[in-house]
Length: 554
Image 1 (cartoon, rainbow, N blue to C red):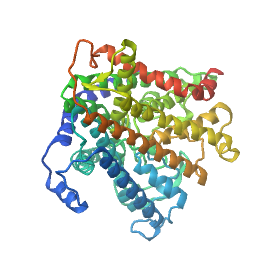
Image 2: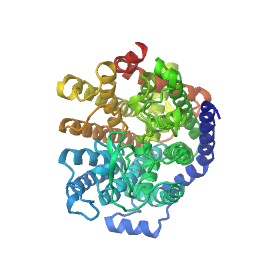
Image 3: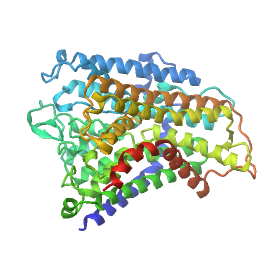
Image 4: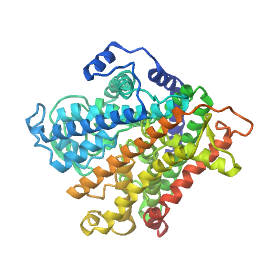
C-alpha cells in the first residue's frame, strides 16, 4: 500500500474511534463529576485524608488544595529519588542527584514528564512504579479537577462554591484513569509490550541512552503516561523503543489514548452546562486545529529539500522504519497538541518547518485537545476572550453561557494567556544570553535557537518532549526548566480558579436577540481565529529567529 494512503487511513480510523468515544466517555466523565454517590473505596480515601465529601469549597479553598497537594507530591517524589539506593527494587542504582531529583519531581507533578535522564539506567522499579507512575495518575486527575471547577463556574449562579478538589481528584483517579489503564495495559501486553520486574541489562545505545535487554513494568506505565497525557517514558528512547511501542498497532493505540480524554471533555462541558451544542463548538475547534497540524507536519516531512532526502523518498532521519513518515507525524502532532510529550521519533530531526509546526502546537497552549483537563480550561479561557472581542466589535457587554464578562473576568483571562508566553520567552532569552547554557545546544544558528526555544516551550506548557540536540543536564538547566514547569502549571490554575469563582457568583442573564450564539459556525471560526492570532502576535518574532529562518534559507 502507498505510504501516504496508509497515513490517511490511519488518520480516518483514529478520527472515527475518537468520534465513537466522544459521547459515552464525555457523558461518563460528567456523571463522575456531578453524582452525589461515592464508592466505598472513595469514602475510605476521604476518611484517610480527613475530607468531608459533602462540603464544597470556594475557589480560594479549592486552590489551596491544588497547591498543597502539589507541594506535598513534589517533596515526596524528591525524597523518594534521593533515597533510591536504600529502597527495594532499586536495581543497584545510586540515589538520584539533587538537581535531577528536583527537576523530575516537579516535572511529573506538573504533568510535564520532562526527563533529563535515561529512565532505564537511572530509576529503579520502585521509584518508577510507586513514584513516577503514581504521579502520572494524580497530575492528570488534578488537571481534570481544575477544568471541572471552571465548568461549574459557568453552570452555577449565585454561589461561591466550585466543587471539592479532593473529591474530584479521587473520583477521576478511581473511576476513570485506573480502570481504563488496567484494561489497556492488558491490551498492550497482548500486543507485545513488556511487563515484568526483571532487572534492566545494558546492551547498547539507542536514542542517546543505554537500553535494557529484559524490560520492566513497561505496559502499565505506558498506558497511564498516554491516558493522562504525561509523556514520561520507561526508556530514554520513549515510544520509539520496541519494548514500549513494538508495532504499528500499539503505535495507533497510543495516539488514540493520548487524545481520547481530551476530545471527550468538551462533551462533559456541554453536559454539565446544560447545552451540549456548546461542547460541539469547542470540540469542532479542537478537531480543526488537530487536523491542520497533522496535515502540515506530514506535508513538511514528505515535501523535503536536499538530494539525500529526495533519494530516501522522505525525511526519514530520526524516524523508525517500522512506523515511517505517516505514523511518526501523526504521533508527533498528537503528542505536541496535548501535554503528553511522548515521542516515537526524534523531533530534533524533523525538517525545519515540520519541527516549527510542533513548536506552534505547544505554543497554542496545547488546546487541541490539549492536556488532560488543561486543554479544556485553556480553550474555555480563549472562548471568553473571543466573546469579549466580539462584544467590542458590536458595542455590547459580552456574555458567554448567560454570564456577563466584565473587567474582572477579562483580566483573569488575559493574565492566563500572558503567563505561559512570559515564562517561555524570558527563559529562552535568559538562556541565550548565557554563554555556557547556550553552548549546550548541539547546533548553532537558527536551529540551536530552536532547541532552546523548544525546551522552554515544552517545559512551560507542561509538554515534556524535546529537541534532543540540547543537553539540559546542568544544574542551571535542571533548575530553570523546573521553575518553568512549576510556573507554567500553577500560575494559570490560579487564574482559572479565580475566573471560576467570579463566574459562579454571578446571576444568569436572559438570552436576547443581541446575544452572540456561541454554538454556531461563526463562533467556531472566530474562536479558531483568536487562537491563531494570539499565538502569532505573541510568538512570531521568536519563530522567525528559529524554525522560519532555518526553513526559508534552504
